[in-house]
Length: 319
Image (cartoon, rainbow, N blue to C red):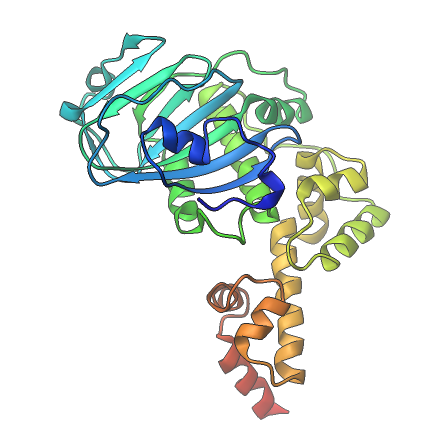
């Protein structure tokens, strides 16, 4: 299991190795971020070629949701589900003999969910603290949500797309405790509130951008932490704002999200190193805050539209 040291204090909850143990598995992949400070938003991928030898063991009740997206179809002839000790007819709920790939199952971790599957599976599980959702709602003037809609095998196209996006990043050092995962968790949380709690869309706001001093301080902190060590909560606290308010105000002021702004500054620094040094690309990647050369090359291509080496040759030939 991959877990950043900053989140190692969180040892309880249905995520990572804890969740794997409930599924009788020894291995898992995880990325996680504090959400809010005393809770953990975590994404765990669990895979098995053989299915489960027995039903999952009881998951301790907690004030959190577990939202599961199956990467592979799940045949219902070898799948059983219990909620609060009562069997659930999943086939009746979805009207099909299997749960299609990238469909969603939504559980309240206070309702003792338990399952068994006799065939191989590949699931991405989102551990979503209610406290984090309540914080997002509060920032939009909405009271904490009391109950969420129970869903089985739902075709939630937004969660399917988010899962496809995050799938190759689970277990990545670049994502655990990062601005990117912070931003992802806010998008995810807003969608959950809208789709499963009936909260009105949260995107509309009359608030403006950051004050000049807030913009200077935020960008200063990001520049000082090109390795991604700064968190959205750190930036928001420094500006005296909630995380979601800060994120919207930053985008209004700079036209991009905080994470995108960080990536652009990393690429600017990498460009300077490419033009003024003979360092190997791998070294430039590390000095620019990326975990490895391939991650750097992909980010460089997305932002610049070319590979680092071709960009360097092109600029040098015009000098």
